[in-house]
Each structure stands twice: as C-alpha cells, then as structure tokens.
Length: 98
Image 1 (cartoon, rainbow, N blue to C red):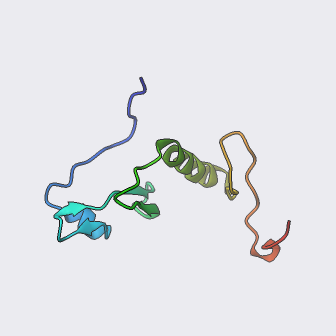
Image 2: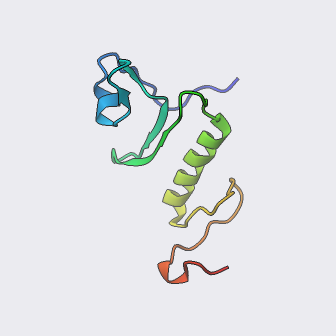
C-alpha cells in the first residue's frame, strides 16, 4: 500500500469548488474533477469528468509526473510520454514537424 505524500482537503463550504469553477450549484456538490496546482499556487491542469465516467488514477499520476518532469527539465512532455522517456524541446518554430 502506498502512503499519500501530498495534501488532501475537504470543501464543506464549497468555497474551493466555486473558486475553481467546478461547483454544481443546483446539486450543491462539486463536479467530479481534478485540479493540479503548482507550488506557486497557479493551476497547471484542470480536468472535469462527466458524472458517468470515473477518473483513471494512472493517467492522473502520469499527468502529475509529466508536470514535475517539465518543471525540473524545462522540456515538453510529448503525447504518450511516461517516466523514463525523453522530453522534447519546446520550440514553436518547429510546430508540425514530424
């Protein structure tokens, strides 16, 4: 069993879900979503899921690892990237190249 090494929170007064734009006011509950905030407090990723579809935890972990990799290396994270693969240089002048 893995131990959680990141903070979790509760939003009983809906202040956080309202701020992040994921509160369903009619239902009085947050929409199923994942929000990743960097150490500076900036939202780096926000995924909102349909109520019929649950989250896929391995993809959430991969997204977090990709954000951390990009932050540490300055490289971009290509499609289908997983830890251990190289990143890519972020250069808009090369957009569309194969």
